[in-house]
Image 1 (cartoon, each protein chain N blue to C red):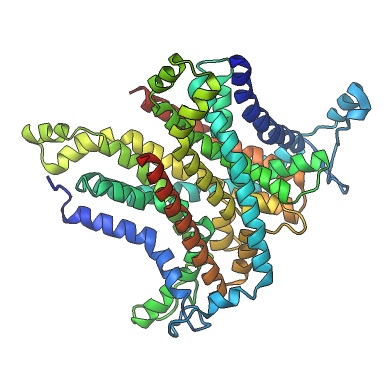
Image 2 (spheres, helix red, strand yellow):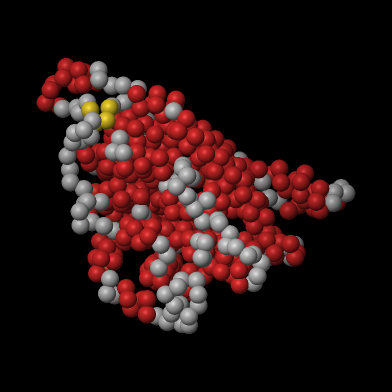
Length: 297
Length: 260
């Protein structure tokens, strides 16, 4: 009786994930090896179970690596990967430069402030993502709030062109995912024993040298985790480059969307999705390793 | 010992100003009487009243609320079961794989998940509509719920359940009278998170919607692409306020549950 219940507890979520997470990915993989066709559905081969086993084998023979070889040889596509990596990398760097001082200040704030500060740092994540991106359109547009204020104060003669540029995409990415960068750094700083810094200062270290030789190195695991939690979602982002970027600011997410909806080249979109996952695999494994090492200590 | 100092205080002030000023400005300007979004023309709530006449928007809100409620309910059940497996089933064969299946959707780009689920529905020859969006949101939501509930189950004092068991309670009685009430705050938090994620999702919904199942974020997105309008400001502010309200209610209920 008990083991039946145990099995059911496992079976229900497992079957759901197999049906709606694992199976769909098998289909993406299969489709990335298919060919676009003017048909419904718009690709071939189409597997038909009624053809029997040999019929399926016959269909599988039509698999092709065409989409991949085009993705990996055409400069148009390679440019998109390179610019995605560059934009996600820059966003990560900026997020660390803003997030680290913030996390440090949070960890040094009086103890009774800290729970409120943590809630303040997490709360934006709970509010609407779309609204937070939209807010930056209102601010950054040529006739937006920022330009209006700067022109009004006479600081600039012409409106700044930030909206629809890579700069706007960077601002949007940093803004959207900053809480993910701050929290792991804060956690790493918060659990440090303050006696370590006091010991260093007793031994003659200045405040600055104690920070660089004790506090900072000990916070590196949190810094890595925070960086990856910015980098990974930034790589696959669609909404931010689509709303804040110009038509030239392509990222993989936008490429995928265009291949799928505008060009209706589903095999190409599937191959692009697989390549994106491939690019994310290394940072994900790094993150996983950092997390499990954290769990061991 | 206050160690924060002036520079630390400045970092806090600037950091949180960066996080909150944009949504704060948006909320303020939603009460702007002027049709020009950036020119302040006095206080007015007229854009909020105008929303009530926007039939398409209201229809999509109704779609979104139904999707969010259904998908968050499914996600809470499935996610809690998954959390119990992760916390209580010990080291069974395939546990690592199961754990990976729970964590993968959390880090997977939504656009990839959207394409994958869409292809599944096409391959099966199923119509897309409310149901397909609910399934997509439930799949993503259950993983968030599983993580939240897992943390809570791990913190549980097992001796409480053991005591009930020793006193003659069967496994089901133990679960429903001891375990479930103890993890209820986490279930509620998970439900609310899944609800807000569903209510806010644009990418998955665009891949999986069919005729007549346009969600609120899809409607808002289409308007945003056309430009900034006072009406969108008002909708956005309502969304912010609504999510804030949901969270405050959740926090209050969780507080009361803990007090009992």
